Image 1 (tube, rainbow, N blue to C red):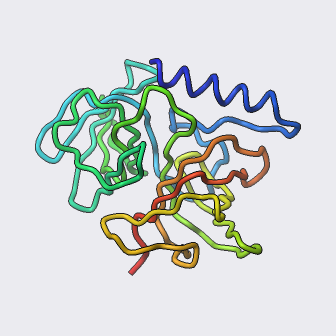
Image 2 (cartoon, rainbow, N blue to C red):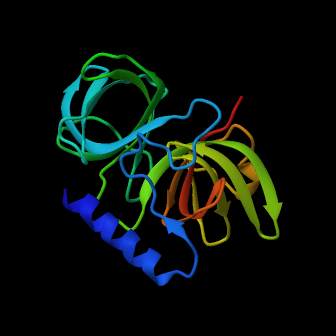
Image 3 (cartoon, rainbow, N blue to C red):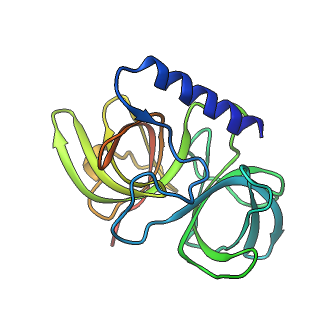
Length: 213
């Protein structure tokens, strides 16, 4: 699809211009770049092909033979992929989305799982993809924080700094880096990832979906 091709072209160009080894974010989301040592959320970028009450079917943008059926609860976080603001899933059939679910899934065809977070309204031309992750630990470094985060691409050290557009979810309250802590659930937008373990990247935008109780 056009938006996936554009994303890959941008990531490749950025890699060629860099003097460090980089890898592009995992687009399909089913094979983590940095293997976690505990269950990680699964991810898929694709198109909603069917809507039902409390359930959607998503077709993989990379492989039209792959789909996943996702059960929706009222706890599922839904954001707009372009603005980061909260969004609705109503009447989204044929919409381009990034879905994050699991980690458990049935062995049926297509598999079924429980949705955790969804980014709707993915544009055709992307500079970075949304990713879902849970923060394991936070380290303060000057005016920035580095959040070790288990994402759908595996472990990442995600830098969040003054240049990161940090947003709340379902509230107008201002959120800052100080609100991010162990257990925080984030939707993250980032580009290139430095090849290390864990991988390293900087978030251009981040939405604090929720904090642990």
